[in-house]
Image (cartoon, rainbow over all chains, first blue to last red; front, side):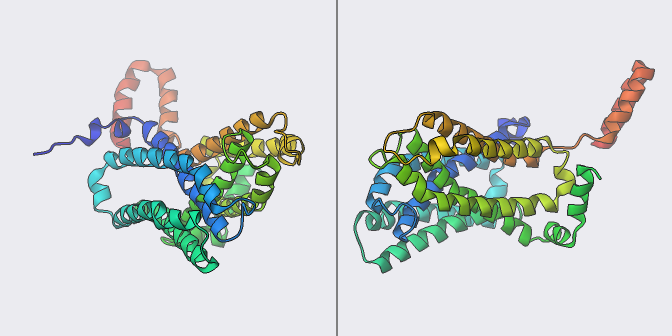
Length: 147
Length: 190
C-alpha cells in the first residue's frame, strides 16, 4: 500500500513555498508560451516581420525549452501538494491532455511549418491552432481552482 | 473621502458585485489576465533579451523593439483592463493587502523606468547597443518578475483577525490570565 502524507510535503507545511512555486510556474509559462506566441504572430504576418519565422524559432527555441523545463518541474511540485484533488479535477485532466498535445504539436507540425516557407493559408491555420491551444491551456489552469 | 472609501465604493458598484458573484465571468476575466501575461509577456521578454544581447543578435535593437512595441501595448492594455476588473470585484479586500500595494508600487516603478529609459534606450535607432541598455533590461525584467510574483501572492494574504487585537489588551492587564484566554480564543478561531 502506498502511503503519502500530504502534511509532510513542504508545500503544505509552510506559508511561502506554495506561492513561491506558483511564481516560478507563472514566470516560466511566460518564457515558453510567450516565445511560441512570437513565432505564431510572425506566422500570422505580424510582429517581428523583418525576421523569418525560421529565424525566430532558432533564436527562441532554447528559451522555450528552458521555460518548459521550469514550468513542468514547478507544475509537478504543485501537483504533489494534492495529487488526488488534481487527478479528479476535470480542468486538470483537460490541461494535461492539452499540454501533451501542445508539446507534440510544437515540436512537429508547428516547427516544420515555421521552418519552411508554406502558403499563407497553412501558416495562418498553424499559428491559429497553436494560439488557441495554448490559450485553452491557460483557461483550463485557472478553472482548476474554480471547478 | 479616503482611498479606502473609494475602494469600498468601487466594490459596491453593480458590475463589481456582478463580477464577484459570477461563477463563470470571474474565472474567465482571470484567465484573460493570465492569457495576456503569457502571450504579451513574450514581447517584453524578447525586447529585454535583445537589449541584453542574448537573442536575435543579427537584428538591431531598434528593429526588434520597434516591431514589438504595438504588441507590448496591446498586451499591457488587455492585462491592465482585466486586472482593474479583478481588483474592483474585491476592492475592500485588496486595499489593505500588502502584496497588492507592493504590486501597484512596482507598476509605478515601471512607469518611471519607461520615462527614464525610453529616449536613451528603447527608442534609439542606431545599430550600436545603447548605453545603459543592459541596466534597463535587467531592471525591466526584475520589475515584471516582481509584479507577477506579487500578483500571485495577493491570494495568500490573510487579514489579521480582530480577536488578536483584544488579546493584546489582556496581555497588558494580566499575563498569566491571558494564557488561558489565548487557549480559549485559539480553540474558537479553529
